Amino acid sequence: MRGISMIVHFMVMVAIFVSAVQAFCQTSGSSALPASAGIDITARVLNVRQIGFPRVKIDLQVIEGPSIHKLSPGVITAENYIWTVGGNVDWANVRNIGSVAAYYLLPGDEIRAKLFAGVAGTSGSAWYVYGISRRGAVVPPTPGIMPKVTSTYGNLLLVLEADAESYRRGESVTLTLTLSNTGKEDLVYKFSSGQHYDIVISGDNKELWRWSRGKAFIQAFTSLTLKPGESKVFKEVWRQTTSSGKSVPEGEYTVTAYLTLGSPTKPTVGPLRIKMK
Image 1 (tube, helix red, strand yellow):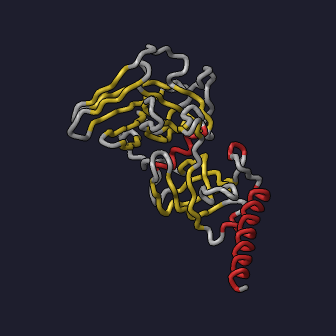
Image 2: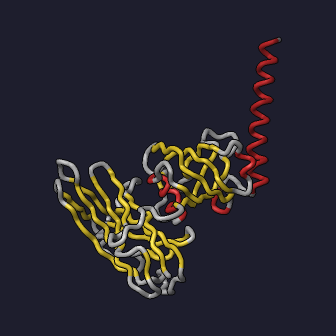
């Protein structure tokens, strides 16, 4: 009888937990699909555990949020939500820009994000975040030094730079992507076309401009080889317009660059923050 009582008690506790998660989803307006759900939070990053690019688990100290009382004592562990197609990362989905950004967070970073509860009955994380953006500059501004962000992918070092931290309306923005081989062996990357990289500029977690939009590339397999210690530099200019040619308003924008490899994992660098005033 005692064994049956313990089982019943366990089942009751599980039911209470599931109900609590579902209740939070209902009261906060979230759902199983985060495309239009979740609560806005501001949080401080306490710890980052990379679990395979671009997925990561983050310990967060929630600072602001309409339902912060539900998160007492305010420290949660959340996984970045990644949109996929056929089990692979959907790199064409602009919502992944803010999610992939979580992979490059550091302890002490302060972020804004959307938070939602995991779906009851699944083996996934209890909490997920997406639409992530850092508060403040990724790299502290230093007079006379161009703002930049870096990332590594094995022995590949990616550096993304802008020629200024802020720009006047209508002023051209020069963006530089540098790829460097820091290892002792050749790095060889295969591409399904003549396009080897792309640069995306977003505002309010929405894609506004994509370097490759409207461009034609050779439709044949190509490759890029970097010898040990070798670097390749790519410069592109953004004229403060959307992909459709409409001028963007004043504000803060993020820049992300990545290699257009055919594999699910694409070396990515960013986001880099720039301002229009």
